[in-house]
Every structure is written in structure tokens, then in C-alpha cells.
Amino acid sequence: MTKLADNVNPNVYDKGSEREKTSEDYNEDIEDLFDEREIFDLIRNINDPEHPLTLEELRVVEESNIKVDNKDNTVVVSFTPTIPHCSMATLIGLSIRVRLLRALPSRFKVTVEVSEGSHVSEHAVNKQLADKERIAAALENKNLVQIINQCIATV
Amino acid sequence: MPNLELLQTLSGHKGIVWNVSWHPQGKIFASCGEDKTIKLWSKEGQDWTIKTVLVDGHQRTIREVAWSPCGNYLASASFDATTAIWDKKSGQFECNATLEGHENEVKSVAWSPSGQLLATCGRDKSVWVWEVAGDDEYECESVLNVHNQDVKKVAWHPSLDILASASYDNTVKLYKEDPADNDWSCIATLQSHESTVWSLTFDKTGERLATCSDDRTVKIWKEYKPNNQEGVIVTDRESVWKCVCTLSGYHTRCIYDVAWCHHTGLLATASGDDIIRIFKESEDSDPNAPTFELICTKLNAHSQDVNCVKWNPTGNKELLSCSDDGEIKIWNFSE
Image 1 (tube, rainbow over the protein chains, first blue to last red):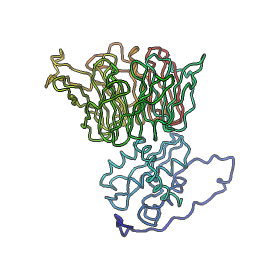
Image 2: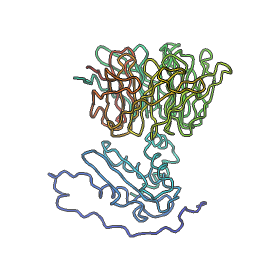
Image 3: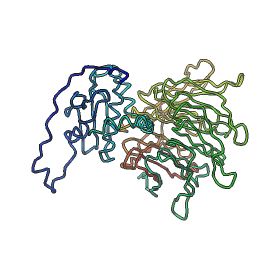
Image 4: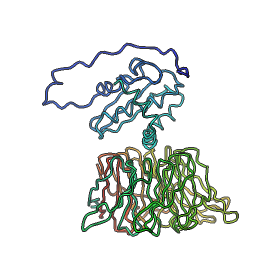
């Protein structure tokens, strides 16, 4: 790497355990709604763009910062950059968004934002991540898509 | 009961359909989107069908299409930084001019009422005014750098060469040419929205403007000319635009488009909550504090975000809409 990471020595946390499967999970007669844990499982193994670590290991994403509403078809993911001036925040948000865009049914309205108070440019980053036109344009940039695909290749 | 009746669902595009545009005679319309194609639709018997597909004009998403007032030209704005002008002088539609100059994504294109001017805007924060200089020739008249974030939409006054633009910087700006030096400049900044302004539409008089935003409101602005009888103070001999009405509490997500019908006065909105809404001005509406009533809510108008709504220019109450779900729908509104 030519450039030093923003946060060269981030705190690393243990991974959580796998979701416990209950008999209900195998019962075909019970409708499996999306829940926070399922969304978390979709994004926990996304790679950090700067470290060979997952977003879960850096506690950038946590199950408690995810909200799912199956009635309104909304998913809200708040993520926490490891440092408040993280220049990768938008890229991390974009990776989460792309991962969910590809994995969830299109009926879901997905909101990805930095958690409150966790970033110096919180408002600007959130506004950018909420602008679907900018996202659509960004996803036509081959280099950027390549980087995002690397981040989410491990999921 | 006011009702929006679905006449037809049109599939054909792959991916997001960003925009639709009625031909001025209302018998043809164009659509464009993520699949980098433009489709021209017209009616065969009772059904709308694709008549022509224009390909190879753009390398990336086509964000907007606009027919010239004479109906002979179609302009298309693309994320590939260019605006293409199509016509069928040769018998079939071809791209005969390409407007280059924006640094990156062009997001909107609009013809002036005379058809002699074109405006474009984009992510590079600029608004360009182009003059039709001759057959397939377009000259840049002005580059207006007054927004400080990307510019989402441009729209012309219905009868004068006054241009309006909406931006990610939460403002709307108006421009006109100074006849003394032929220079275009910003004559008003409309500030009140709390997030990105996605679209705007003049009423038939051009003295009112409706804007819609990510802040989930629609705002109505009224022009107060110099020496107006209401006594609104006007400086610099330019009109003042005031927000006279805010429609809030209706939309639950971003509002991507608003269309003001020049025949019926009805306002239609396209929202990220998948709903098309129709508003009507109250009978006893005060011009300086107008009231609008929500008279129709079409839930699940599309299965994803509604990106655009357009009233048929003939005033027959047909409404076109298009969506992230890849579909175009044609509706009939009845009261």
C-alpha cells in the first residue's frame, strides 16, 4: 500500500457466534420474515477497505444498529466508522448498500447512514448515501465497482 | 370520487426508467433510463407500443429526454457527460448533434418555449444555456456557476426566456439574459427547502412555481413583480419569489418529481414511497397563501420509487409515470 490507512491501529473485536437455528427455521409452514440478525449476517463479513478485517471485527456494523420493518418494507443500517474523520466512510456505506441491494428483494427501501455523532461529516456522508442518483452514477464507475466488489467478495 | 385509473403498464426497459417526455401533440412519448436506450412509444389501436428504439447515442445511463416545442427534435441528457440531439430529417431518428462541455453526469435538459434555447445541468454544479445556431448547430451562450452542489433539474418559464434550476444545495435559482450585454445571470434564489430539490414545474402563467424535495415537501412559490399591489418589497427591479405554500405531511419519502398541468391546474407528484399523489387548489384559495387539497393517493402506483410524472400536454388528463421497477404506466385521471 502506498498510502497509510486513516486508522493504522484500529481496535479489533471478536466475531459473534453463528445464528442459532431453531426448529421453526426448518418448518416450511412458518413464514420467515427478514430480521435484524439476517441483515447483519448479510453485511458482517464485508471487508474493511483498509484492513484485512471484517466490518464486524471492527464493530463498524452491529446487529443492534440495524432496524427492519417488514410491514413498511424498510431496512435502516447505521454504521460506525472506526474514527470520526474516516475518509472511507462513504465507500463503506456504499459497500453495505450494494450488498443489500443485491441480496434483498426490491420491495425493501434501504437506508444506510453513519450512526449519530460518529463522523465529522455525518450530514454530508448521509446525504450522499441517500441520493440514489449519485449512487446510480457511482455504480457505473468500473473502478469503484471493482473496489466495492473486493470489499463484499468475502461475504 | 377522484380516481387515477391505470390504462396500461409498459415494459421494455431493462433496469431503472428515469424519465418520460410527451411529444407536444401528446400522441407520442419518449422514455429513457439505465439501459442507455431511448424508446419512442405511440398508440396502435387501444394499446401503446414501442415504435422506435434509439441506441448507441450514449455510453451511460440516460437521465432525461425532452422534445422541442416544435416536436421535431428530441434532446437526451446522459451520465456520459453529453447531451444528444435527435431528429428524423433523414426519415428515421438519428443523433445529429452532441453537446459537450459538462465535466461529468448531465442530469437534465430542457428547451425554451421558443425552441431557440436549450438548458442543461449536471453534477459539475453548472447550468449551461445553449443557442440553436443553425441546422444541427448549437452554441454555448452561457455557463452559470451559481449553485454550490450538483444541479438536478432545469425548467423554462412557459412563455418567457426565464430559466429555473433545482439543486442538491437545497436551493432553486432563476436566470435570465440581460439584453444590455447578452449575459445570463441569476436573478433570484429560492431558499426554504431543507434538503435536495429534485424537480420543479411552472404553472401555466409562469408566475408560480412548484418545487419538490428530499425534505418530503412540495413548495409553491409566487412571483411578486416590481410595484406589486401586495406591497412586497422588490429591489433591483427584479421580481421577488416567495414561498406561499408548503405541502408537508403527505409524502413519507423523497419526492422526485412534480408536474403542474397547464390545463387543469392539477399538481401530480412522484415519490420514493411508490405513491403518485394528485393535489388540487381549493376554490377559495387566497393567491398570497394558496391552499391545495390532496384529492387522490395512488398507493403502490409502482412497486419501487416513482421517478417521474408527466401530464399529457393536450389536457386530456392522461398521466405518465416511470419507476425504478423498470415500468412505465399510463393513467387516466377523473374527478
